[in-house]
Image 1 (cartoon, one colour):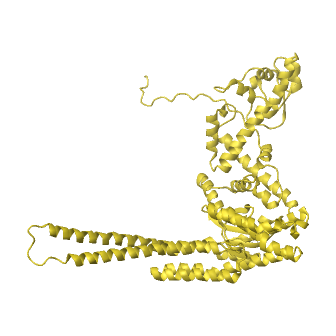
Image 2 (image 1 turned 180 degrees about the vertical axis):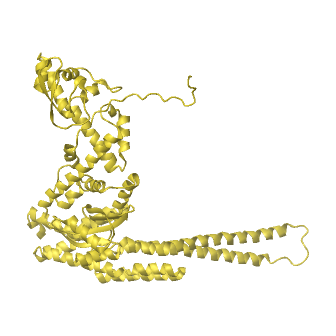
Image 3 (image 1 turned 60 degrees about the vertical axis):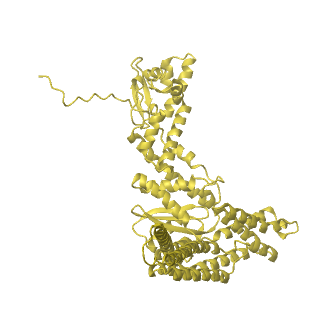
Length: 588
């Protein structure tokens, strides 16, 4: 920036040189356009030289600044209500760098992770008192935010290219779904690492559009898509099965959702109606008994034969008993339906969750058949309408694809293990102990209740326990070879993907950003994708990119900070003249 008399600054930093004249000495000096950090560094250097007794004229000439500017540097800068110690610190090179990091971090967290806008950043600067050192106007901070998004996108693109160079080949599953803002947004991620392959707006959601988007996302990556997990949309299935010649794994949730939609509302209505019938029957019983007591209390009693109160009460009691039985049956059907929905999730696993053994496809097919038969019996008992039965039939049609996915899993696992060329004993241990144990660990990690989580982890340890015996052939291998076998076994355990819920969760996050901003530009969307892949870390300290590429990378924020311009100083605020009252009389 151009340094003028009394330390005045221009609003632009052009990086060139200008010729100026010191009004007190006369010689021409070169005045450079310096950044805020460079000025702070020169200010510190000037203070040191002046403290050593060097003349101001020589120091100013050597630094290339006007002597009046140097004199202004030596004066304390008024900063309003900010503490003098903080103001002095911000004027140092370390203070400028600290202020730079703080402002960029505020933008990074508030706008890219928090889903808020630039105005909240401005408010943060005002409330924290940093507006005494940084321009806090919307226009100033909006320009910084645009620069931040560009820096994040560029840094992520460079990191992706670097990581792709040394990436080992991977056979991956693509979990896919679309959301609406209201434009169509295609979201694709790799579910094991949670790495977002692509997030982009599209004009439609045809199979060709999905295929083009995924191929562009995988360009330069050493990966092969062998499976896709999504709902039953025709375009998604064709895109995976035809264009990529991969297996399509149906989303279990959508099958369970069809069963729930077909049963929950109607059964809940029947339970409510049955409960109302119980209350009505009890009311009639109470009325019959009250009528009998009123009759008996009359004195003298009316002439004639008394009413048949005993028969009326008996009929009312029978009605109450029947209503309570109907209510209990309705509740039982509702509970059975919920249990059957959960049973679909329990049985749809390649390994038995009770014993950790591989489930043959025939056994899983029989368990599916039993569930559908029980649901049909429940539908008949509850007299469900045609629309509800159609939903149950739609869910039942997924059985073939469920069984195909189990078959695909075991065939792929067998091929991966056979490619290792192990001895029969090691191959058997890998197929029946290591892979099932690792799979159970992954299921336990996704369990929401403590009891199944602890039970599955105990079963996993039980399967691995024989492998620790000294005479087991696995212990004869080197540490490198054992690590390689465990890596392959882990890849096999991760192969079974029955849900695209990770994409649904991502869609929920994007909806929050869209709701707060009402529109996500392409650059904003790319920046959000970059933050998800290269910044957010799991409990183990890894990012999605590290898990996907198999190697660490530099911290995204540190790289972005190097690209960001320094925050501009606050503008000098001019006092606004008071607004005159409109109703005051004007002097003649």
